[in-house]
Image: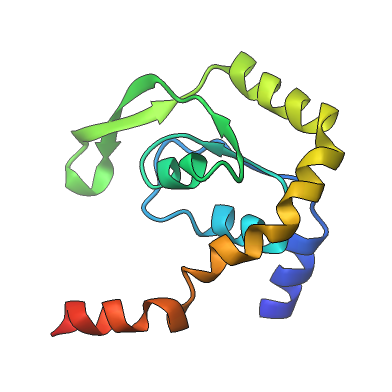
Length: 129
């Protein structure tokens, strides 16, 4: 349920999303809205989230062929992978700076509000026109 999901998210100390590619990045945005420190892969849709400075950015420079079964196992673009050591360093950084990250995250809701339906409604309606 929505309540169970929210309770689960609130129970986390840190959200870690080492994704190889994202279309929008909802869990990262939810972590920001909840004030939970997050480690987010710096690629595709997550790039704008990393650029906000509100998350710990995970370097993902390794290109990996994006092969999709639905398209006959053809490569369609690339995924972006990380080095395990880089993820480890991000996790250590969060542990060592946890209280600072937590105190900075109090104002993250303002950033997250720009993605609410009420904030985007006019843009969505304009697209549909």
